[in-house]
Length: 210
Image (tube, rainbow, N blue to C red):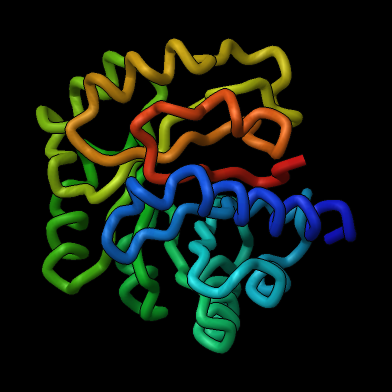
């Protein structure tokens, strides 16, 4: 991870704390860092870079030995007082002692049993929402079990520069339909976070923040 990325992480963490502190959810920080090994390198290096208390959400669903990788990341997170959320795998999250689990939008219907198990074991649960229609289906699909939603893409991203974005107005519509607290994800950086002022968010999430 380069110096610019590290600086952006700390800048966005400070701005998120200032902007969203009044709406912060119990135990959920104002910043979630999503992993992308191609961009950041091995995720355990993030653990000693992000501010204590930050959430690292392990995406990287196609890792060859994801269980071993996740266990190493979990150890690094515990050492640095960082909270680990494992994407898409409740049994793995439980096995490594993760703080929470993130369920992608398309996996909810087949994951409800696992999600209930996660809740019974004290894991915190986040979900992904990409549209107002998906926001309305949160309760219908059983997602009332989740604690927070990550709404995306809010702004254009380097990963998907031509992908249609919600923008602040579209995001506001999704938030209005959501029954859960939410984070803005996608293209959030020091130059765009100010455009989220006044929206009922509890924080921001992202990969680069640059």
